[in-house]
Length: 366
Image 1: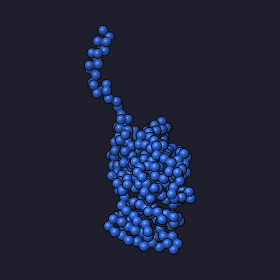
Image 2: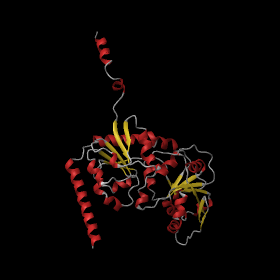
Image 3: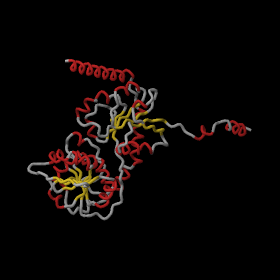
Image 4: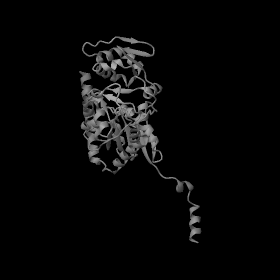
């Protein structure tokens, strides 16, 4: 009889209430069409859609004022109005490479205090951010290939901003001139800024001749070609090794060590300069990260030892997605900022903004 009553009652319960689970909503953005947004966020949050109701936004005003859940903010710093209107939400900021200088961080120091948690891709940024709740996250290793028989050449890939550092470091190691190379970058950008790039990359008496064709740019003996996923894949498959050079300038030294991680995951031996952030970061996990002071060619058997299995496991999409879940859990479990503390910071920022506006108006009237 009890069983019959139970079955009868269950008939009146809507089926979707029995089978579906209520997912916590999280907002992620501002969404961008740039590949970097997918790499740092969309690829990751798309894997979490069984755990969260993920809502991507392009403008901060799309987030309801009443929303009191988690907001993941990727790279772009929100305007003050967002913090005023959305004071109920828990905010996690992932700056990636947003900050260009220490002054840039100092100027944003009050805004940074309004985030519940900040997640950085580079430990060095922690030294400059005044917050108790700063965590680490990694990029997942993308663009994986199966290696083929390496050819007698090496590779470099990067944005145009890093070419002067490349040229300066290449001038220190003439042995590399004797080895064929594949250099991949954004050719259109390089062509537009060629003269400044070359001038910045020249060292001492090194003066580079330049030549530009439709699909190549020559700087001295170095040939730069257009980056694409297919050209990168071919370089990963066949290059004997890679080089990656970063200066100790703030913006370069605080960039994520992404390329070195991807090289390791593809079993491409990589050589960097001594001050490269990746040396310290990568070695702490037990990986070999070689500097140019270690360089010999042909490479030794030790340098050719495979590290890809460990790298692919450690920085897999699933592993990095778990890092984001941990960020969410840490943020939700920590003590919420007091309304007074939050409000006083917002008030200070509003006064600061007003003073700046008055000062600007005064100067224009003079």
